[in-house]
Amino acid sequence: MKLTFAGTGSAFCMAADNFQSNMVLEAVQPGSDQPARMLIDCGSDARHSLRNLGYMPNDFDAVYISHLHSDHIGGLEWMALANYFIFEGHQAKLFAVHDLLEPLWEHSLRGGLQISDQGNNSLSSYFKVNELSPAKGFDWQGVHFDVIPVEHIVTSQGTMLSYALFGHGKKQSFFLTTDAIFNPDAHMPLYQKADIIFQDCELGPRHSGVHAHYEQLVTLPDDIKAKMWLYHYQAYPKPDAVSDGFCGFVEPGQSFELG
Image (tube, rainbow, N blue to C red; front, side, top):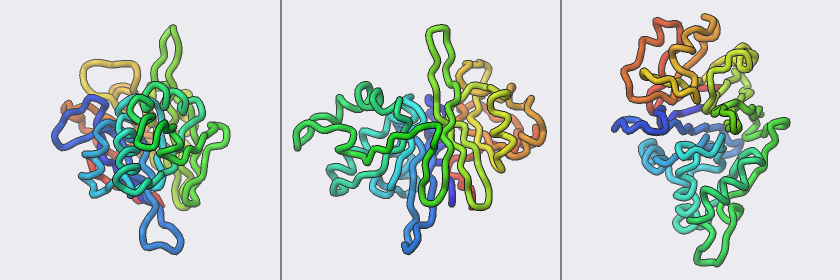
């Protein structure tokens, strides 16, 4: 199993050599020369970042959506229409927590996807919809994924959750935070259990309060930092993460063999 970062940038990253933080997970398919591929989030610039890796929309048999910000779902309309019209109606499995599916369709995709040459469509016209429960997680290509609600935006009016992934690989486990506030008390059991951690990391002078900032992450215990890679960063100069005890900052296009 291999995880490749199509991009490592934040939602607003406009660096010419970077894209939003979407990932491609590949796994061997029994009896096939071609790996199965799951796209983890599909942001607004997915058509460029995936082409940069040599992929087309029909190269994916699954998409996982962590939450509804545009750097995580803004490319789904493109993927749906490209597969529908260009790639003979190819349908990828769409994995998303039940609570995300109605607003994903009603507030993000319906305007561009409902009316087509065949009349009115729905989300299931474009994807094989798989409703997830955080209590159960899901299985894909022989790997079990725990789906973990993490706080992303917390205000007096309410909380926006993102749904992190904990993958149980045959050789090692990994924790992918998606978008989360700095919450070491809640995340420490996952940090400790994972063999490798992919942590969203904010840079720059401003602490937004909706992502873990580098200045917060550097206070984590050394044994946690020693297995932590940082991604979802802005185009500011990067600190020397290795000297500070981390594995480093993930580079665009970087791959990790997960076993």
